[in-house]
Length: 372
Image (cartoon, rainbow, N blue to C red; front, side, top):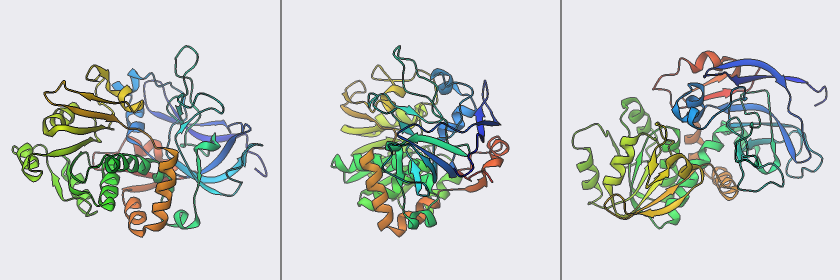
């Protein structure tokens, strides 16, 4: 920084929930670190859960005082002495999962949520998130973007889009070509449908109880059927569409009724992808903690539900997936346009605290430009 700032505007998590705007020290830049001036950010469903201090947040011992936000993009402001991947002035998007340099690659933290585990297995205080003027992360979590993407995509959306890409690639690589049921038409569910459509998967069924979200999903023209699970004959409709052969169920939402419906719909030897974080504390699947299955990306077979089901937890993105997604977005004007359309509203970062308490069920995705 030409005139280095010592303090930066940041939104911190308050004890018991809620956020407050504070002046915090600009993060120190270590040898392998990249300091990014945040120009784009967006609110994830996990952020809503944390800010509203739900049971999942308490179960996972999220710490007060963290700088929130884990979806971000911006301009490289400063780099560590050993960084080779980017240079000051580059436009980049950021992977939220990080590993402190030379640590166990499985010992990840998530910016703005929790840090890597210490020697006693306790999650440490995380690196600060993207609801701030600056965010500092290891260069392995930084991805340079072209001017084309900078000009056409709200670039913080690449981080959540990578989730849908990862799920879609898993489904494709599993050999599934048709009859996929997706519960939840929020951002991740919508992105997933876009990628599955792009892959040529047939009979994509999107399940969503909220009428506004169903109408929102319709405009993307990426699914074959959009169904309301509250309708009396919902299960029969799905089975009829799929000729009693649902190959894959994806839970992008998290409530227990979704899981229960999913195991009933799946055919024997079907695949159940678990992505949506549970809305209730201490949920289990086949005796395993559901949150841990998702965050550890556990994969196992179970016969606990009267049939053989292959479960797979999925979270985050992979390095390979980031590169694949960036490459595909460079090629596809359709995907660039549609991904940006998932934003319901874009506001200045300063308005976040006021806005977050007024968000209703009709908000699909809230985006933010950087602090003015």
